[in-house]
Length: 187
Image (cartoon, rainbow, N blue to C red; front, side, top):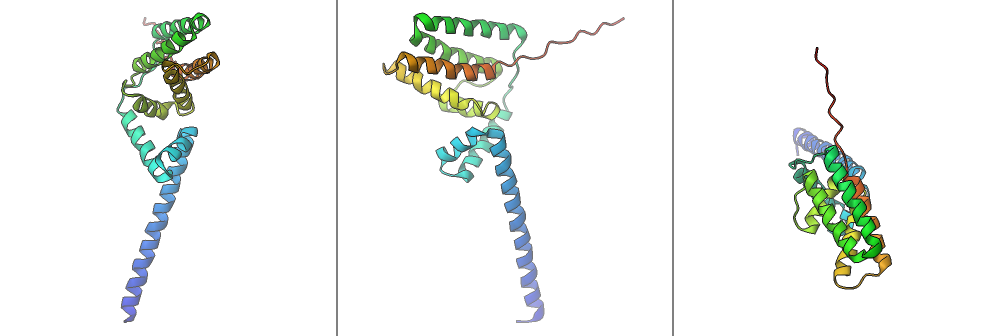
């Protein structure tokens, strides 16, 4: 082998090494950014999808999907409507816990829709919500599990109370209000 051939091979190997190191650094940065962005949802996705690479692909896909939505804060009037509706759900719990849980589930879906999230199947809703509300999506899953169990007759009053607590965590996180418009005096 000639000296030029050895040098060419060394250069190619050096370039490949630099490309590999740059790719690895980019992957680590991406992983760190997703871990920080999604918090506990990152770990849930790793477990659900069988490893970090698949989970990260899924989380990036979620971000891209939700970016296309028109997610908006609530107006003060709509905020008041939902706040009042939530108070009614909590009061109903005293007399009819099962009905209160069903109403909480419906109210959370309505609030999601009012904010601009599409209302599809539960798994897609929870995936969509995880993009902007990663710290409370686990509450949504836990509440939904109890609500489904309740419909099948398998929930105690304490389970139902826990469902309301879980729904409230998501509800409060979703209940964002747009700042009031400032009036400018002309003249």
